Image 1 (cartoon, rainbow, N blue to C red):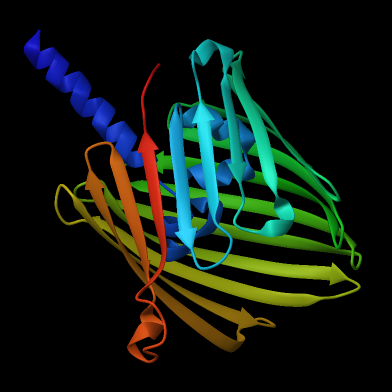
Image 2: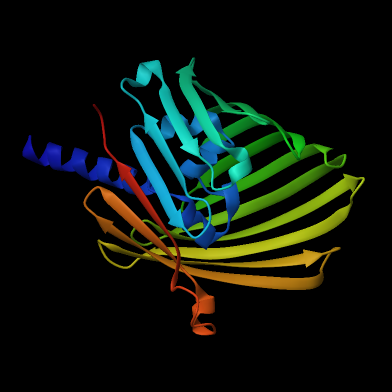
Length: 289
């Protein structure tokens, strides 16, 4: 009996660790919604079911953000509220429930002059998952509709994630933006991973461009309580012209049920007026009621 309890606790601990996330962590890795993360429930409200009874927040120089997901009973779904790290997208409320093996979710931002609505559906079957989402935003200075198709498949230690996103802008100009991309993720020792992502991004309409993005990164658990991570991004304009690249370092500390992430400001090495830390992220999985 005692061994069985240890095994169950071990599995729950691994599950919680895999779900730990926040904006600070993802701004370091820079891979976007190709990776599963609580902050992308903003795009896929059906994924709220993956983060039962969960709290996250980020402290930064700009607007702060937070999120709270409450699931008193899984059969009645998950209820959430969150604040985005950008002022114009405001405060959001979301709800998700599983019906007939499908995860269904809805989100809404009841902010004056910045109305945002999202609906999504997803299903996991064997080692695969597919997510669909539709979002619309009607703001004071911009308005758009967005459709996302996200698919992932586990192949041994590899995770393959292709994605397509269409955004149709209405204001301040009319244009359609398309994003086609794929991530290959390789799991490594102690729940860590490395990844590579390639993405082609182009827009047609009143304003046009063609861009290519390449991303790579690593998250490595060096000990029971310390995680090292970093991301590299290279961006090209008009095919493979005018390249620009960025590198972002960071680390995380795990203490009991808390996870604290730090995004390091590399520019501090060249400018002493800057702070060493760009942002701090905290998340906490507080279990069942």
